[in-house]
Length: 321
Image (cartoon, rainbow, N blue to C red; front, side, top):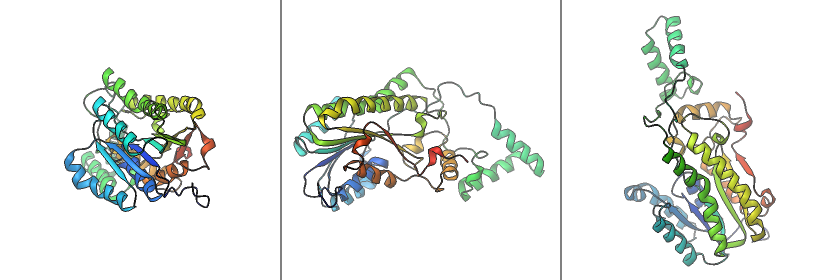
């Protein structure tokens, strides 16, 4: 590692392996790590049309940084897809060259566990406001929604209707099992295999993503929340058992971020508004904010933070309104 800049990896031939690296946190990390000199291997699953029109320009940016980029558009929870990516790591990176493994796959099920019986507080407030104004309730509702969605009036998030409604289908046992496996344990399994096969660098880092939904109960987020707590338990176990191999494990808890995965969460438009108001900096977290922290984790400064959850949210989680 460059003694004058421990985060300069140019010329070292080391790699970052990122699962879920075609959008959001994974893509931002890939771009930032590429600029720092790490070669990038990405596993992702997207429609071919999306790859050509949306994702390819981003991949071109990574290559323009002067590093190698290898991508695999496969089902990462299928044996063939996993095998393809693993063999690619072996052939492209080789023994002892994976500096960072990042699991950034968002594959969970965001469904209510039971029919929603929450009182209609929003409807009651609209009705009361309409009565006070002497206007029809629908006209007030339309005005609130227009001001919130079209004019950026975040303070109306408690009255506005979300454009990301709950799905009609309720959470099934299969949804729960798949989500907990894919988002809870897959991080551990990949890191273990990379370690067993000697592919990780002698001072490697493993990173996965969590959210404030690990402790706060968001309706429709039960399966993902359960997966995140499993993920965090896995990280602690990895920190203890993989440390003798030189591997450090971290969980990054990002603040509310405008990503494709985030926008699949019911009511996320309302959550973003509330986050902008609550955050001490009055803005959302960006994927680039998170990417800077992930780059920092690759160097020596944060090595002793092994096994911890690192909040990257500008103080959002600890701030009240």
